[in-house]
Image (cartoon, rainbow, N blue to C red; front, top):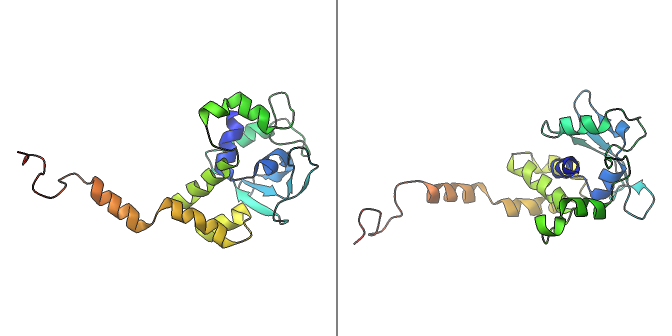
Length: 177
């Protein structure tokens, strides 16, 4: 289950999309991607994604070995991500396994999608690309995350604050009365 949570936090897939991903949706050549075209919300039959559009989500090296292990020995139409016993993922089981209420109080599994978004943007992936990977209907939705990350001016200011060498004023280190 730890692998599933790591995959969720690096791919930005919705929980319903993770649950419905098939081995055939994990393409390795010319670059590793997940082809997202269906979702399976809990208690509902599989359907098209929230946006109704297909999308390609690149698979970062950090989670590539995890997905390779998940696909190993499975047929193309098998679910890619399953429990250890091969059953479909259920949020309640994952939360119980992870002791979610203690480990991540006040958080939802959906927040792993936000983690991926912030990770991508913080590492310099263009917001338009992130928008496409997430399947947001509007770039404005993706741009909300930029506010949470701060600007380059915020980073420069913080770097100045954290620079060694004095806080300014009469009471700098060594000048204290």
